Length: 474
Image 1 (tube, one colour):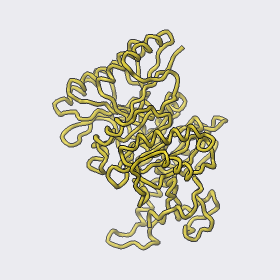
Image 2 (cartoon, one colour):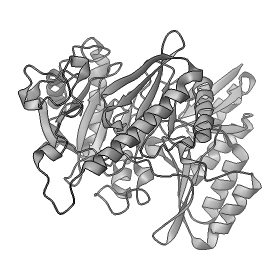
Image 3 (tube, rainbow, N blue to C red):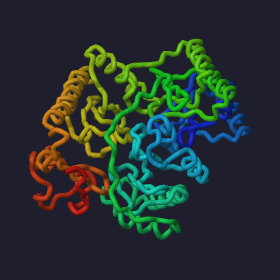
Image 4 (spheres, rainbow, N blue to C red):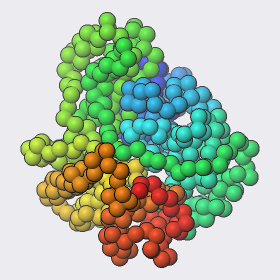
């Protein structure tokens, strides 16, 4: 019998020394490979007869872990993207992240996300409690996605950086202690939740004065050697998600030797090493050669979200990547999610969702932005072997629509009229969008119907009234 060991890495980073200690314990327990998860945590497997020894070693080293359980969700963050994917943008920097993580004195049971609004590498809303940097220094939006629902609620106030851990703990306690009100329900009273939380907290809230503006999605290429400032960073991806322990030990030792303090994990199940000096680059190349690790995979293989420890999802991804390669398919600005379980919190521009019969529905988010919550059904009940042909058509349609928009755009020196631009209203609660050029077919609203002329319209995702929508593009 095998046991799955999970260790959370709050914020998605760990010191090279601490990781090396974990690797030695895993190796002593008989593990050969290690995996990283969607929430920037790590996994490895051991046989049942080695479990007692592992538990003793973990206790001695004071390492928190779980065996065949997932009771405590990792806190994920966009710290990994700092300086390399959003260089010199925004106010969120290393010190801000670390100060917040240092104040967490509990292991969350609900999923917590902490992200900079200038990046698109780490998902915005895949957590239950999502903190997103605002335009006001050291203040964050709070979006709660109530467990076992698609209901996303934006607090009417911003929270100060230092108060994030206390807010996360209080919000979690309220949700778990009052499951009959806030857990797996379609009729959640969001105002009651906020009032209950505000009464329990003594923190520095600041009113939201403008809604969050989501950036256009673009997945940066996160593999290989890349230069930034006067240094390099190295991203390492594994096609089968398995990182040999011997390789990772060599990585840790070289980090310690070259005074690189931290190793970062990503939501794309890869690792990133920052701060590599030019003089040390050859040594990193030698490690890759010694362990025969390939880098610079095709971009259409790197833009997938698969459930953790999911053989079916991984095999389907590999099949589709091969077929995309044969078709020489462009997938830039798109990412894909494979959901074999009904409540998986993965996000993607294009989502493959398995049904009870083993068939797949193909959906995509509005505007193909994975951080938008409203999904549009494209095809239903498709056999796995037929998915690639439908996905290829959908990808081509995405680029055709992009091209058409560019061709019909007015010259830059002309001031566009309101009719030349897409008119989009966004729900302030869950960020769903009403695009006049799309309409809302699911609610029998045809293309071209202006938002202002709708009567008794409600958000199709969270049922917020029209008064909770704001004009975001005109």
